[in-house]
Length: 132
Image (cartoon, rainbow, N blue to C red):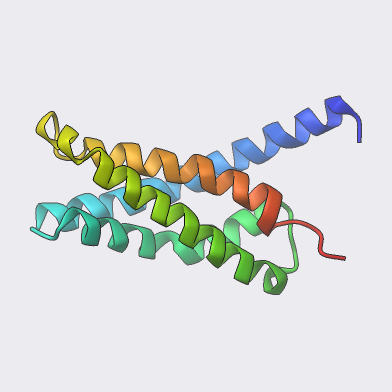
C-alpha cells in the first residue's frame, strides 16, 4: 500500500470514527452528566454513560469506520480493548478529580478524551484487523 493511500485510509477512518464517536460521545456524556446531576457518584455515572454506547460503537465502528464484516472475530478483542480503555478512562477521571473545583464535569471531559484516542488506536491495530 502506498504512503498516500495509507494516509487517505487513516483520514477516512479518523473521520468515520469521529462521526460515530461524536454521536456516541454526546449520548454517553449526556447520560453521564444526567446521572451525576441526579446524585450518582462520578464513577457510577461514567459507567452508565459508557454502557449506553458500547453496542452502538461496536457495530457502527466495525461497519463504517474499519469496513470489517466479521463481527464475531472482533467481539472479544473489542471487549478487551474497551475494558482497557475504560480502565484508563477511570484512571484519568480519578487522577483529575481535583479539577472538579473548576467545573464538576472537567474530569469527565478529560477522561472521555483519553478513552476516545486510545480506543481508536486499539480498534485500528488490534480489533478490526484481518485474521486470515
